[in-house]
Length: 401
Image (spheres, helix red, strand yellow):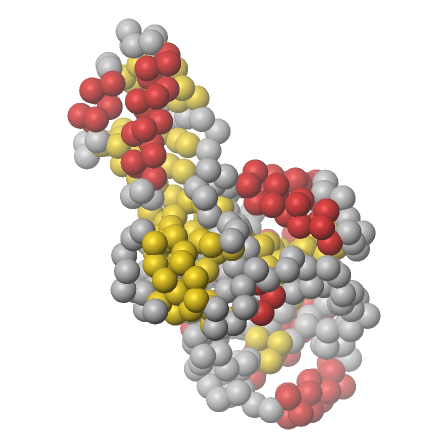
């Protein structure tokens, strides 16, 4: 008899097959016939047992089955096909805006372990969640992300690193978010860690665990206080602002919490003072953000000029007696080393296609230890000849030639 036990997998048997739940929010199905070919089996919550089959044989055949299953990984909440990036996948974590590590040559580092969102915010600058035009989501193995972050920090040689877990979507969809914070905080040079979130998936236990793991700050997106207005702004009729406010008030007793509403001219003007009042009530700073038009985002209103925005902010600060602008001293950037870009613009190279990108007809390719986005790529697999179009801060975009 051989029993295989897993930490990130859970099993649930159904008529259509064995449902494998991966990291809480993702799943795929293993067919009963495929499992029976290995041997007589029985699954419990986080283990599967095969009777009368040698352990080595079970491990080999079941892991082959799992590898095939992961090709059909799908988000439970997002319903999108999901790709798992792990140490043996041959996929670098530097090269795109939406997954892995983004370094702009400063002491502020963005870590992106996951994509996807349960909301559909009307102002979303990256078109995530409900109503998104994106076809695929991604999730990164925690150990791989920590290893690659450690390598980068050793190269940067900076002892004042601020890590922002700032994903294209909702970072709390990453089931190992507590463990990730814990591992990142232990890295030499890491001083602060901030999670940017809607707080919809936050629980009191998660708050406690994040605080104990070393999280420095929660930056919470609340852009309306009225229940109906909040549902509209967040793009989800199930959004419950009362629940969010309750958990944010709890978090404020355990962590530094910043409330960060996005002010959309003519849409949520009446909500700003209510949000400020909530911040005062729970003793949290409120930092109002200007809605900015984004080519690839959702744009429900025209963008106002910065001068007009600051004029409105100044008037609101005077009326409420609350500071609403970012603390420029706190968020002062320090220049640091960043990895050299291994390409020149307009350079033509050959790259290996490793997966679809986030959009239909987009492909992700690998060359010179960088992940490269190739929109409108006709080649479906194998190697492809591409021309490098963009290389700023190791964000690599190319076109097929």
